[in-house]
Length: 194
Image (tube, rainbow, N blue to C red; front, side, top):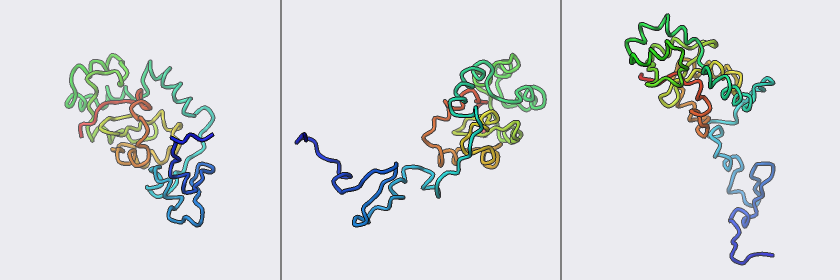
């Protein structure tokens, strides 16, 4: 029973069919390329499909959520905070508020410190190893060390393109729909002051 007030969308009126999550077009209607129809995915415009890696058991998105809501809420997920208080302390004193440093010395997780820790380029570049990796996304500094094994693109791509750098452009190119501030909430180190 068809409702006369309902108008079919033009996509069905032209005879296009949706099959297996791809848009298939009859050969007679050759004005639309199936690859172009999928261009809403930023990776296609960036030059092709993403190369995802097989994650180890226990490293799914749900496992990351569980880690961040349990261990992460209590301690935060920033590595080598003790190094900040020893090796980097003089540098931190020069660019941060005293209240911030007092909270860090009292073992308050960095994502809870207010005002947040201020990180400059020199300090950011000191944290670029697999065991201690910081990066900037949208002016906020995050520690990616605990997230490496959960990243669908693998560890190597993060180390190569993000470690000790501003990764905002790359993040927006491949993951602009991802709520990074929620995903990496407990990995928050501070704000980037350039």
